[in-house]
Length: 300
View 1 (cartoon, helix red, strand yellow):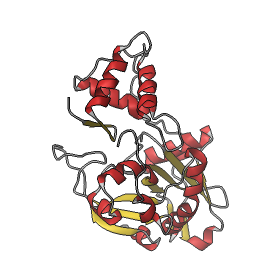
View 2 (view 1 turned 180 degrees about the horizontal axis):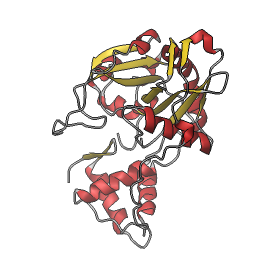
View 3 (view 1 turned 90 degrees about the horizontal axis):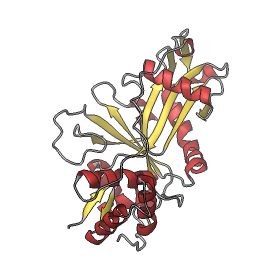
View 4 (view 1 turned 90 degrees about the vertical axis):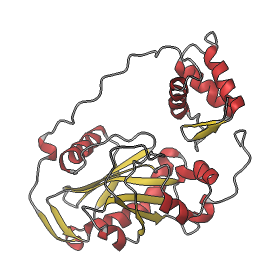
């Protein structure tokens, strides 16, 4: 058995054998969840906040089973049916035109979406008005809604896990594969940015980008117990030039090659649109943090 990589982690031959042995011990580990917890504990596979990385391990176990490396017990629960389309309500309907400049709006409230009613509104607005619709992102994520002083919604944003491998970004950071694997969680992707179509306010988009850049590290730390040091975003170069990102101080690193966010090979038959790659450092020593020497680990 040779070493393999699953869920962003390299497993040596000895570790794969250990995982297979744990999966085979049905008396001690009768469920997939129990196996995932045992594997994380045995291999010291933790999230940045110290919790076991159970979801990543669960996905790795299923991939190992598909590759014939082990056999898992049957799922404890039947998989639920895929969620249907987001229903639209009057809350997300088109509103009267809002024009002028950023100064005309007065103070803007940009806050994380936490309440159930705001979660539902965020989904509705994105599903109804974003050209890509509502898409679910796994892993860590943080959503925002922006409101004007009169309580009118202006924009929606989402930040989620960074892309696994982006050549121009990785060259910009000058990090090794090992550093990327260990520190990728310190990068966060702006996966959704929607200015509502009836909001025609000059300089609003760049102002919101500046506002969220200032507050996101603290919001992310409050939720996940660590702060990212770099933001990234991918802008469809056939639709947009990324003017608001450039105005807000983001750096354009070039264009993608049309491969998916997690695609590591060139076997994809359906290519995605090329996109501009933008990054925004959140602290001046971001590159030093991302390239700091790696501590010795049981996996290393």
